[in-house]
Image: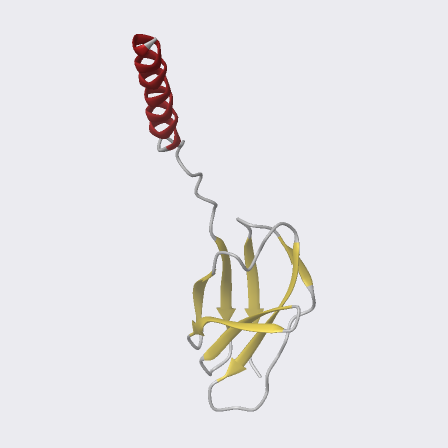
Length: 117
């Protein structure tokens, strides 16, 4: 009887260790592709670029005057097909152009052209 209890206890302990050891082995986490906005700023003013999702406005960065800038949309903003708008806030001016609503998927590259004004 004593040998049977020891054998069952040993088997239970081995099963617990085997279960715990397999929990730590997970496959590699797939890295999702970056979603970017390429801003062609043809205006003579630097612009702060924002993405608008729902009622939330998130700053992406600054697009320098008369140049092209690539900005990355932070992870978690685009989840599946997401409707967004872009707002350009010129530094030194009150004119703030805003884009039409577009649907963006994770990994997309969006082109945004800001004309001179």
